[in-house]
Structure formats: structure tokens, C-alpha cells
Length: 104
Length: 139
Image (cartoon, rainbow over all chains, first blue to last red; front, side, top):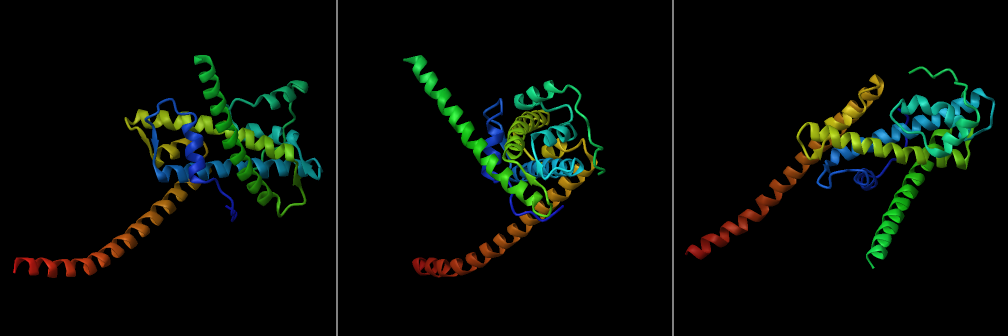
């Protein structure tokens, strides 16, 4: 991918995961933390790039929540419950016009 | 009294979560401005905040899945194989994560061999005077 400087810190990923573990005895290996950080980075970069492309397709100078909302289903599939903020918006216009999904 | 304590604990958990959210927001902000750097398009503050919120929620899915995967393998420690399972749905993502995993593993082996060499060198230096001391005491 592209050369990026920013990434999620190992300690942050560890704390984020431990927030949701059901079993307190669950541990995470250091390498697994690094790999999860990478996975999170891919998620964020994909969200950013795809919503930027969506804004470009709509001839907008700025990405707003609407553009993110249109590309979000490509990223989260069926597994992520949609945040309430976005849910309220999608109820306003029930049919979300989809952009042609970027290839790859 | 008990209720008060419970309330304080709840409050503490909430503020801990808020701090983590702020940390996620910060990193997401950095990544977003990097992604937008070569384009004419800007991301609004609300868009960045929304990506941060979605990312924070995505962590919940990751954590629960990873914990299940490890438990399924009768382990209590999550390893890189579990993370690879998380990325299994997209071929290109799985390939990317597998490559990253190999990179990390290679870095680790390099670090280990360096450490080993360093340790061996240190041992050589420290063993000699110790042996000399041992001989003296025998005499």
C-alpha cells in the first residue's frame, strides 16, 4: 500500500481489545497486536479513500458524513451494527444511492 | 453507599472509554489527512469523527471474534493466526495481512539473533573473570 507514517499504537490496540473481552484471562500476543493494528489502519485508510472517491464522483470539495455513509456498507459488510448517528440519517432517506464500488 | 461506589466505578469505566476514543480519534485524524494529502478533497471534521466512531465500534467485533477464535483453538492467548482468520473474507486483505505477518516474524527473528550474539559476547567477557576467580578460591 502507500507509505504512511501514522499507525495505531500497540498499547492502544491492547486496551481497545481488552475493553470488550468477555473472559478476563484472555491475552494477546505482541505480534497479534501489531497485526491487529495493521488491520485497523487498513480499515481507516479504506474508509477515508473510498469516501474521498465518493466526494470526487459527486463533484464535492469536501467529504462529509453523507459520503462516508454511502461507502460504509462496502467496509463493514453485515457484521457491524451501524452507529446510531448514521442510522438516524439513513432513515431520513431510506434508499441510499450507491456509488459504483471501486474495483479491488 | 454501595450504589455510590457502583456509580463511581461506572463513571471511571466511562471516562476510560472516552480516553480510548480520543486516542482512536487522534490516529484516525492523522491517517485521514495522509489519505487526503494528494487529493483536492478535504475531509470534514464530522466525517473524521464518524470514521473514528465506526473504527472504535469495529474494535468490539474484532475483540469478540478474536476471543472466540482463540477459545475455539483451546488457547487463552490470541495469536497472529486468529488475526488472519479475521481478515479471511477478503482475498486481497488476507494476502496483505499474511505478508505483514511474515514481515513482523522476520523482524523478530532478526532481533533475536542480534540479541543472541550480544548475549554470547557478554557471556564471553563475563565468564573469563569469573573462572579466574573460581580457580583462586580452589587454591
